[in-house]
Length: 225
Image 1 (tube, one colour):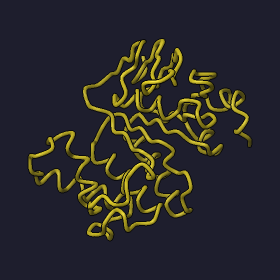
Image 2 (tube, helix red, strand yellow; image 1 turned 90 degrees about the horizontal axis):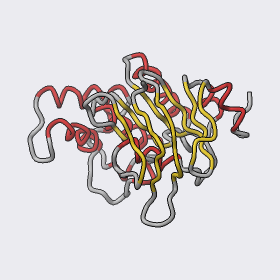
Image 3 (cartoon, one colour; image 1 turned 90 degrees about the vertical axis):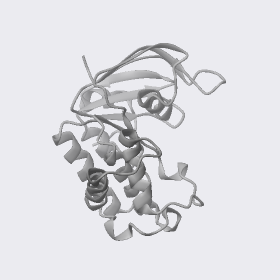
């Protein structure tokens, strides 16, 4: 069985269901690309996988005991939040320490390592709202890495980024896959979908196709060589 398996999942936000009978399996230790048109249910599915959105019906079975790390789009983070980059990344350790317990020496070492990995250590004292879009996205990915989760979920992490930021994001995905982390990322970029190990194509709140990217991509008109 994969790292996560969904059977007959229906979910939404109080109105009509966005997900309508989703059956899907996320393979362990691999990168799964989640593709589809806007409104097809990609972000909602990520919320269900992360456990931040409870399904109205159906089952979600997860392997492993750690909570998934969910990296939202940078546009979902308010500019006015009074957070330094270091504090934002340190929030990733709350999954281990809780909200009020002070960070340990190891926690601080993990935070430094994640800042370095995403190339934002020199921005550690800056306010999050002062950063460019690419810098902010790298900080959010660093926060996700700081959780040291076995499942990393990324909601369109490369959308609208400059080439420098893209290189960091893509190298990070490759590195954590090599470390055995299961990755699911929503994307509109054909080259990212084709570079994944597995692909889920969303259409109308359901999975239209799944499997190796070259095969699943035939159901998604946006993917072209």
